[in-house]
Each structure stands twice: as C-alpha cells, then as structure tokens.
Image (cartoon, rainbow over all chains, first blue to last red; front, side, top):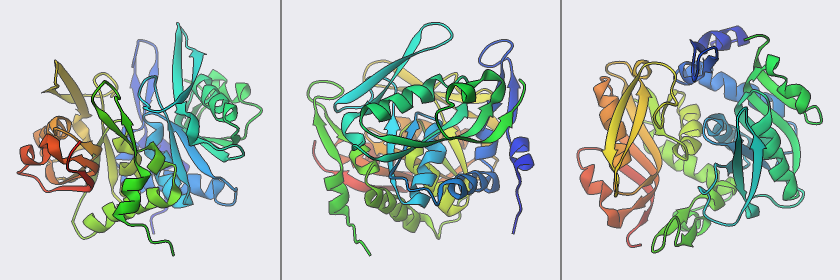
Length: 179
Length: 179
C-alpha cells in the first residue's frame, strides 16, 4: 500500500509564476492529475469527507471542477450536474452574473437539474475569492436545492473566499496561506 | 440490482432541436448525468471495455469529456491528462490547429504530460466529424504517446467520424445512425 499524505499532494502541484499575468503564481494541478496515486488520493479524501453525509447530487463548475466531481459522483453513487458558461446548456437555464476583478462573468444551470429539496455538494478545483462558487450556490438555492457543502482541491486562503462563504460548510484539501 | 441497458441510456439523453443553431438536433447528456444509475452505467461500460488493456493515461478534451474521463481514470487507477483550449495551460504546451465548418480552432496539451511510449486512451463525450479527437491524437503522438483507443459516450455515425479515424480503435456507447 502506498501512503500518500497532503505533503505529497502539495509536492504534486506545480507553481507557475506570472500566469495568467505578471505577479500571479498559478497553482497548476495537471502535474497532480497525471500522477495516478495523487489523483486517486484526492478522490478518496473527498469521499471520506462526505461519505456519511446524505447528498443527492454533486454540482460542479466547468471545466476543471468536472475532473474530480465526476469520480466523486461515481463513488458516492449520485448524479452529476454541470454548471457552465453562458449559452452552452441547451435547455431552459437559470443564469447568475457575478463580479470579477474587472467586469462581470455569468454561469448557468439547467432549471430541471435540481429538484426542490435536493441536497447538493458543490465542487470546484480552486477556491480563490469565492465569487464563482457563491454564484453557483445562489443558482442551486434558486431552484430549491440545499447546499450541504462546498469542496475544493485548493484554497487560496489569503484571498478570503472562506470568510465570504461563512454560511456554508467549506472544505479544501490544500490550503495556501500566502501567495 | 438495477439492470440498465443501452436503451435506458438512449432514453436518458435529451434531444434539443435547433441548438446551437437551426436544423441541428443537440444530444444533451445532462439528463443522463443527473441520473445516478445512468451515470454509473456509462462509467462501468467504459471500464469493462478497457479493463484488460494496458493503459498508462487517459487524455480528455475539455470540458464535457472530463466528466467521464475522471471516473474512468480513478477506476482504472491511471493518471488523467487534460487537453484544453489555447492559453489555459500554464506550462510549456504543444498546440494543434484543426478545421471547423467555418474557420479553425486549436487545442493544447502540456509537453510534459505524456512520456515517450505512454499508452493513452482518448476520451470525449461526443464523436461528430472527428476533427477534435484527431487533433488530440496528433498531439499525443507528437509527444511520443501511443493511442490505444478512442472512447465516446455518443457517436453521430452519420457524420462519418469513424471513417476518418479508421486507423484507431474507436468505441462508442450510443450510436445515432441518423440525425
């Protein structure tokens, strides 16, 4: 048996300076993803966190969020709901705009993807300022869903997302305290 | 035990006329994804197809491809490699342009994602004309990888993608013979 701790997961992340722009250190998960042991470990940690929580659906934000949300849905034996950028989903959608550093962005969910009372786990790969996941939670709640947790592989703690999401149960595997 | 055959999977797909434009029937997989039994069945069918094939990595194209490639990587205990639209991957990439109906598009892969001799399974949700997956195969092969299979949830058979990909082992779960 291979033991693979959080330190090994940190090591598996590649830090790329000045991407996507000068002064930003990009935490690149692709070096973790291609490592079968690290990939498996992330799914197992997420599963262990939620296996005793009653959850009906996992809702995830494109596109990196899908990578771990899929295996988690499979392992938890629940359905998967994608939240996507505008005009990608073909049926009737709910849309939520949210602020970016400059300007706004928007995400959409199919209106029939969530039933009133559905217990939902939200997942994305990265928690930064929390704008996207807060918008995702608003969408789920607007359809009558209950957000029972928010899960991330990486949390950029210094950006304050957790504070903004204080009304939710927020879980992250790898916390970066400083940039 | 729930038995869930291919007919049930067809039924779980929603057909949306005139999306993304007039005259196109869009095969919407979100209605399948949110159904826990259908979701699991798709992963299990893909796994059964490849479980005895030596495969080192699954390579998938954003973003819908990621949804089933993730669980398959987990279940097969192999690494996952994303192919993405330009300027999303932060480290050194190989890029491939390919023709669309009007104009061109491009996809990228990290150069260090594939090692020479890696046996690769390509996965996407949909096989249409095959342009994207052919470009993905070119990228993998340019890095020394060997494409041992191409897998899809849906194949739009009437668009001829399979013929174009005749040098590869192409597998799809749901074939639409006509539009």
